[in-house]
Length: 289
Image (cartoon, rainbow, N blue to C red; front, side, top):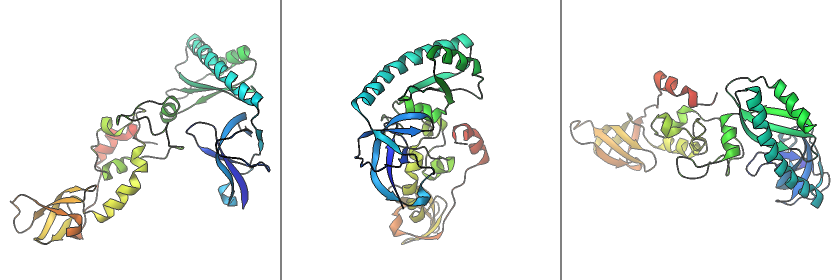
């Protein structure tokens, strides 16, 4: 077992483990730590805790100190510098004619590095841009290409549901989302209806999947053969949320399908949910690689 604390660098970001180095940390406090990007200021998201060794990515870096008033002043000053650096970098991108979209800028606490985040279609040669920026800022420059999901997380906005993006409000990490999830949840495979503002499949498909997977186990699917109080029949419509089924009875196939609750039928042979090749092909651009 090892003692760790969890530190988050974004308001809604991934939590990283650090060695508390004997410092007792409280949730919400800010600390100074060394990361692969340099000296950074983060917020305690998880207080001192013992975890298994296999949960740690070694070497575990130590917390340098809790933030001082001087550190907090530097962080605020860096926020002003970041806005200025953002505008200057945009001008330099236009000057060099590079096909890229600048998303965000971050200063490390000690000013030893400035990180510029951008999106672009494919690889970008930004070597001359880096030299130009280094000449202006006189410090280490790093340009980091990010994906469209990361862009949405950084910028934020409103989803098609009318609520703020899940990724920028409570999802700490992205997880793979697949077309199968949309199909199993009974959604129309229309790219407009199942993709977010980022152009990829909606994140909610993933974190709601466990609930749908459970309901699919106990709810007959369309095409399933079931036994009812009125005899055997075939499910022609199934609502997995309400558990309501419409069953075409074998004894009277031309009649209007009878309505049952899933608890009122017994599954004799369940059906499978299948996605056609042409559906997958049409939606390949919105599914994670």
